[in-house]
Image 1 (cartoon, rainbow, N blue to C red):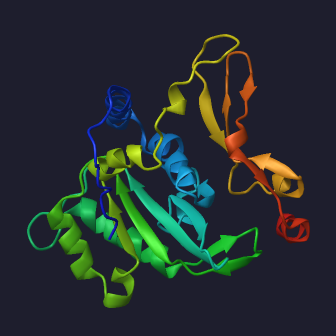
Image 2 (image 1 turned 60 degrees about the vertical axis):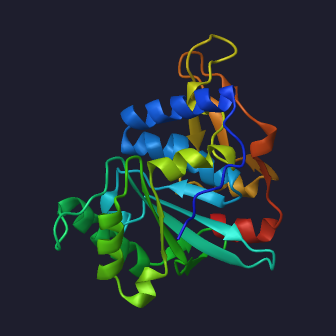
Length: 243
């Protein structure tokens, strides 16, 4: 299971302010905004690659996956993750569970059973782990009920992360400055964070690309950041993936 990071010293004033901003954002954000503006930056800062939200325009194609990504081990091997993201509290009642947690169970089984297509490797790969993430609380009863319903093989894939655990990641790689609140340097309007869509592959043919950037709808200014620049190391592999 995903363990909470241990905080060895109190939060600074700036961290308290940022934590409260993020908490306020979680209270009002839609599921898609929570995924794209908070979850995606978190996993990118934690070192995950190709963090790709599926969005909710094609629900039937998600197979229980709101997000997928991969992580490179020190041995250069890749392990694959997906995330099932919920805005509301995940709870269970009685012994049968309510519709909320039952839906989560169904989607978790779908996510585990369906492989992921990695365009960079140009092949389908099996899922190694599934994050169950909620902007609210995942109650202990819901965790226990979900684990009891899954068999031993499925159970080992699951990692829980609820609101408190997500906020605690603020100190260990989370979005310490909320880019979704960044103001445009040209017109001072609020900018929005953008990412490459899973269907896009043309950028893989370039020497490098930016995994995320800020865009101003008011004046169309694009703000890139060097720490999000990614170099395409193997051009032959990415060319195959793009075709």
